[in-house]
Image (cartoon, rainbow, N blue to C red; front, side, top):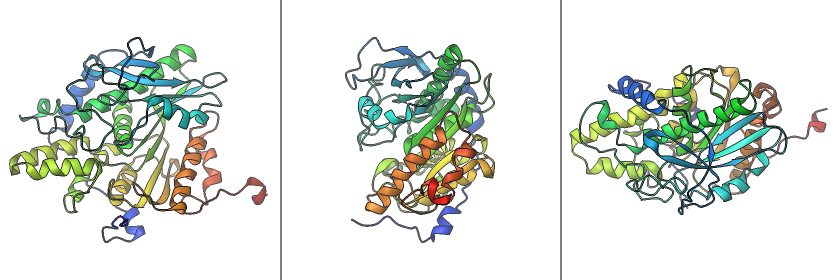
Length: 375
């Protein structure tokens, strides 16, 4: 297989990439109207009553924007509930909720509950969205559904499915927080975790939630992996990816007239996590790749570098390759990141304390030293 491009940049240059944070013209008005619509009702996590045959393994649901029922699966810890981490999903090859629950079962310990969520259009959340292409399979057109809707101004962005998916993530966090308040009290916290598309949705959701609701912050810990759909001005100077969200968006842009192309680029800027990242101030753990064609590595690094979290409260974990089978050493780095994320999310330990033992391995290494070795 051909190794992902380095875009003509060295590793330090890739990781130092700074994106353009300029907002699109309709940014403020669109997100103000969006927020009013999203927060017009209180999302409540309830047991699922009607089976969604696209993924019958959803155990719970909540109502999101436009009365769409969002399927999810709640894993409670064996001990008393102290916190919940909301986990989103990527774009392609999304497992069933039951399978993902097995993958993340070990997280549900030490008082940490896990809420696995499927945004609208994905299996488990298709009861009320027959008009949305099925997500989870490459080439279905989920990512571009509504992107080219005719019209100008902020309301013309409403048909695009991606800001609607952000609403689903925001409401998942609100529903988790409401459950915690009802069962534990206001001192309990919510974490949010996402990779690829899920990372992008998570950045934007966290930014939009910041400072907007009682008992702020809603999201107190954020775990990201290989964020995509970012740094669009830079991406327009690079070759179009051959797979993933960038490839599907690229094909739609290539077929458009110049006027429609600019309209869609403006809409993409409305969703750009580089633009939103300056409103993320909670502790963040982020996995970045040195090479990645699906989520271009320099553009992903630009998201991390735009985060407003204090330097001592955000950590980047480097892997050689992102959406690419880079061999055993690369796979081990990804596996180590999963362990690091579990430590970061631990309900009983502050992230600054839990990340201390990882200091020597954020950039490279295949094995975390045993504490006894450092005694």
